[in-house]
Amino acid sequence: MYCSRFQIVLQEVPGEISLCFSISGCPLRCKGCHSPFLWKEGNGEKLTLHLFDHILYKYYGFASCVLFMGGEWHQDELIQYLKYAKDKGYKTCLYTGLDRVEDSILQQLTWIKTGKWIQALGGLDSKKTNQKFIEVRTKKLYNHLFIKEQQI
Image 1 (cartoon, rainbow, N blue to C red):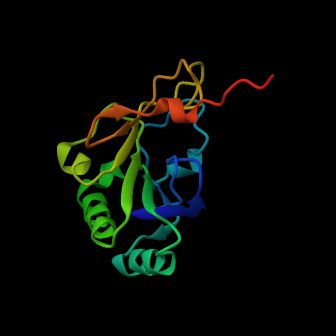
Image 2: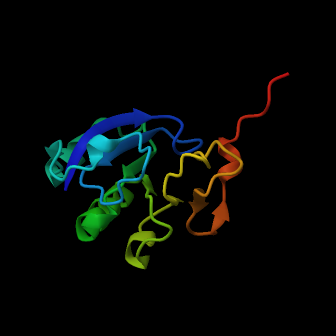
Image 3: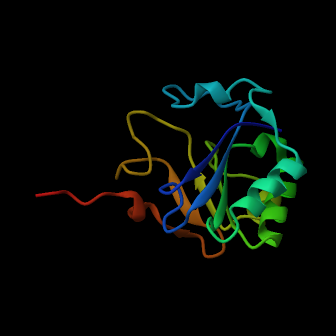
């Protein structure tokens, strides 16, 4: 599994400072994708447990969540990293373009964002989006947290 980009993000998981790992090799190739550089398998740096542990240790007490942008196509590795993050005290999230993922992945997640990018429907900040941001344990939909109120 290769990580094309690592970032600290503030808006992808509401209320959390997240360590975001963008995983390359996405097979979905959604039209209008904002990250087509993630389509190429092997793009970026090999994500090793040593590197992952170093990042989690470095940001422990600052960040509260580990977020994977994709990676479900590397199911066993993804599960390994999600379990590891949980064991280190982090919440976990997956952004996927699929409508559902395997239960073995869901069991390791605090939140999941599902749904293919459809430009005409927009992302989580659109009231007409097909995408869903869900708390896995309760199955509660949290899309409303992404909608900005109209300014007068």
